[in-house]
Length: 499
Ligand SMILES: Cc1cc2nc3c(=O)[nH]c(=O)nc-3n(C[C@H](O)[C@H](O)[C@H](O)COP(=O)(O)OP(=O)(O)OC[C@H]3O[C@@H](n4cnc5c(N)ncnc54)[C@H](O)[C@@H]3O)c2cc1C
Ligand SMILES: *[C@@H]1O[C@H](CO)[C@@H](O)[C@H](O)[C@H]1NC(C)=O
Ligand SMILES: *[C@@H]1O[C@H](CO)[C@@H](O)[C@H](O)[C@H]1NC(C)=O
Ligand SMILES: *[C@@H]1O[C@H](CO)[C@@H](O)[C@H](O)[C@H]1NC(C)=O
Ligand SMILES: *[C@@H]1O[C@H](CO)[C@@H](O)[C@H](O)[C@H]1NC(C)=O
Ligand SMILES: CC(=O)N[C@H]1CO[C@H](CO)[C@@H](O)[C@@H]1O
Image (cartoon, rainbow, N blue to C red; front, side, top):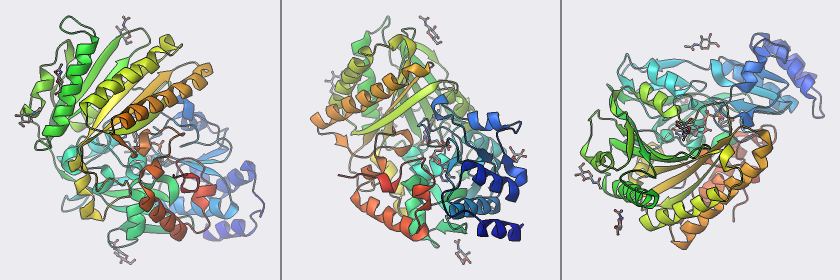
């Protein structure tokens, strides 16, 4: 195998090769994990994406099942100068972020190993796993770890993008719980990045996304866990006990008070989703969690008393069950846009934010063809304090001295002809949120990369110092800039236009 690889590399074309040449080489060196357009599973592989906007037509798909496979693939692609894309859970909806027209698509689905350290202090997860499968795999061991709140989201995307979990207040970002990354560099070399070895790469990967290499495995801090309490409460925005305006104000007050006052109960969490459906239904969905398995904890009492309740599924359940329930509201099969803005945890800003984005929504001509979901994701400043113990990250939040809220737009539709209008609506959402926050002096430049629209610049949001650091690390581990030039998907350092 090895000599065949190098023989092919030696004859690789000097000029940019065609997709056909790249895929023929892939088929030749790794036939058992090669899927060309005529393969029976090609269509399933290229459509395995959360949003239809992410579906494209690569020349071929590779499904490496080991770091060694990945090393051969990457070495080949970088030597031949072939374009490629990388996909883990496939949840990023931005066109081209996890997929590619022509080019080689690398699907991580067969990197699905799970193991528990002898001392139970960490799990090792292949980066092609979904979080739902990862949680379920360790239920019998009574072990849990930070990870996605929805079941289908991939280990890969969260491990290099940040990672918001149900353990946010108590454990911090997913990346702050990663003990070691196994990474394939542009040269094909397989390295570990952790606090001892390649510690600069380790830090840069914690938020730096697709700029350094392909992560094949993570060691993630784990802890004893035997189930939790949580579920969802559905509230009518216009109902018998309260009208729209009063509901918005009450929910806003309750949320901001919770985020401000309840760091002491780091086991309890909430996420608010205002949901405006195409049929006119307007509801607020609140996802609850108590990871210490305490039912109706004091910290969440004020939410449990909110008016206009339509449904309440709170109960004792497993992490995997709750990850399943949370996923139901944002299923596959639609075209989606997402975007995100970060603000301080402030009531007045939030009230003006709701007004401003209702105006955006109500101004859309296509209201009856779209669903419009706006999430409020608490970011207690406490969550940023965990980074330091493992050598920091590049998110630029370590010195934040106030609680924040991440505002996340998720909007969906079916008809491709609405794409432009929805990209516009997404921009209007961002503009409205930013201008309200700036007016209240509560705007913060951090943009959660995994929620960002392609028009946003989350790398710059990490701050100039982190951008400079990431550029240095990218140059060291990828001196020819292969991940900048050959993997167009994702937010790239070479395109970061920081003010
Ligand atoms: C329904 C839904 C629920 C969500 N819930 C959460 C949540 O609970 N918490 C949260 O933090 N975010 C959440 N998100 C946002 C999520 O983090 C992003 O969508 C993220 O991009 C998904 O990761 P993925 O692996 O599924 O996606 P992919 O689209 O497969 O990957 C995302 C990006 O990361 C790159 N990438 C993936 N794996 C690797 C790797 N191993 N090495 C190098 N680069 C890689 C890809 O090339 C791509 O550019 C959610 C999104 C959706 C749609
Ligand atoms: C992991 O991936 C391999 C290769 O695709 C597959 O055969 C196997 O069934 C997967 N294992 C699990 C637990 O999904
Ligand atoms: C660091 O690298 C050395 C040499 O390659 C290796 O022996 C050691 O196990 C590595 N340590 C960690 C924590 O990865
Ligand atoms: C919300 O909080 C503000 C400021 O604390 C207060 O003035 C207002 O009355 C509260 N509104 C509701 C509906 O609780
Ligand atoms: C609107 O759609 C939702 C979800 O499909 C459904 O639950 C609800 O009953 C519908 N409402 C109306 C008024 O038709
Ligand atoms: C505003 C709020 O919800 N405060 C609660 C925080 O948690 C304590 C106990 O955990 C409650 O007593 C407060 O009411």
